[in-house]
Image (tube, rainbow, N blue to C red; front, side, top):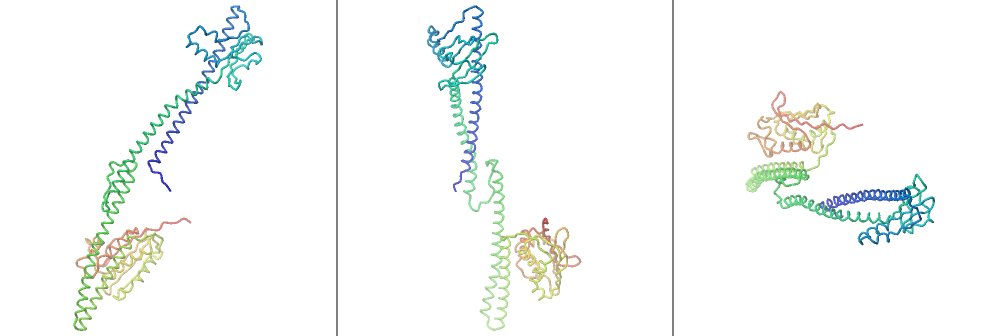
Length: 462
């Protein structure tokens, strides 16, 4: 499907409006001229009839005999200059008159009908004579039986209308052409600014994600470029974080892989069964740690890109399932597990990602809780659904509680091996799900409390 450019759309739209406006003006001019022409020519007919009336009345008052007469202007104007003759005769071609006295045709112009055609009714009337339209004004004298009839051939009015129409059409057409040219130029100049801005974006390198300079961008496009700048900023931060993540991941993987290589070499050089067994056990432990690190890296990558539609979820059931899935380590360490709280608490969350989040935090709690310790999971439904995970481990100092959410950060004095990704994964998932995660101390004992404040589900009607 062929698409019109914005330049063409704007030009066609405004050109249509301009042409419609000019046509509207032309119609108004024609209607106004029509009205003026009708009033002016009708007034002339009335004036001519009154002149005839005054002439006949003056003749009657002077005692002149009123005889039947046919007036021929061609003879009357012979003594006038040729230019004046042409004007009068041209005017006379479209005019005629008759005067009736006592039902007898008294006077008439040469081009007026004979007495066989009776006078028209008083006032204005229109007739067709030999295929030509005539307008007639009839004036009846109130003092005697005199009727004055003045006729006008409407071809004169039509000729004047055409002259006015043609006279107005030329300037209006010129005006339309000038308006269209100015319209095209203004649209072209205005859109060139947008074209320059688009070219600026198009000519950028793939690494240039800094904001676009909007000083020369049209005001109407500022919101679009502001949105683009916002998107560039988000992409720039995301790419910077991903690059940092890849660099850190490569660095973190290099160490266990180097250790695995050394342990494999030691196992190959072992001279007796005991040395070989110790080397193989160390190699297996190193493989387990490397696999855990890779699994955590994959979990972090997937949690940042997967879809996370929210749904109403029973928080107590979710915690119960997470404890069941992650119970192997606490059983081996003889850790006491407890689940308590509101069994009806419901949160708006994504079950898949929330399960990963709770599993990561439980694994962290089990790993740092010494043998014989305890881990308690509590579900609270107060204003917002909250899940608490309390452990009896060493805890985290106040000044480190924000740093531990950074990737690959580990407390220097920590004795438990780890990659420093657990809490970073937890925060990333929590931010995706709109969960507020915070660290504190359990009431009345040492250790760590992780608090997850879930969004409450939106109540539905019905």
